[in-house]
Length: 129
Image (cartoon, rainbow, N blue to C red; front, side, top):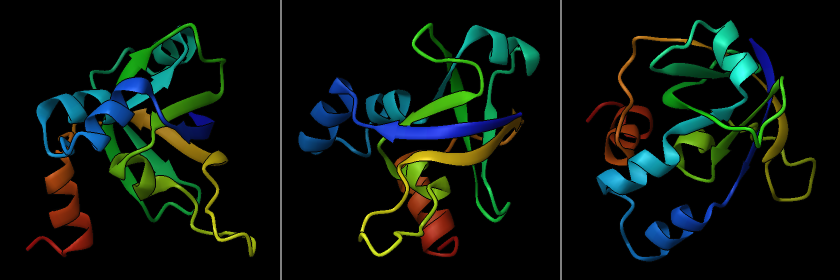
């Protein structure tokens, strides 16, 4: 499914991040999610996990779907976090800030493991060390 990705803070993401709990299970449960509407979730076959892939197809992250009436069809939301940063477009258009809103992504069911924040750092940014 093609969608537009928006990212941003949630109350609990901010509380956990500012409280120094980025490696906690609560942080993973709050942030390793992809909010979507029920219609899009159903069209994907009601998967337990989804893979969100950047427009260029180079970056993918597995997260859990979160069905909510807050989303419209064709739009998804990932809380501001390391999971969102994997697929956010890095182009800043000379503003110094990447495209946190409206980046095209692909969302599809996956069997990949949803990694913790520490595992994302080790696997994707430290080369698996």
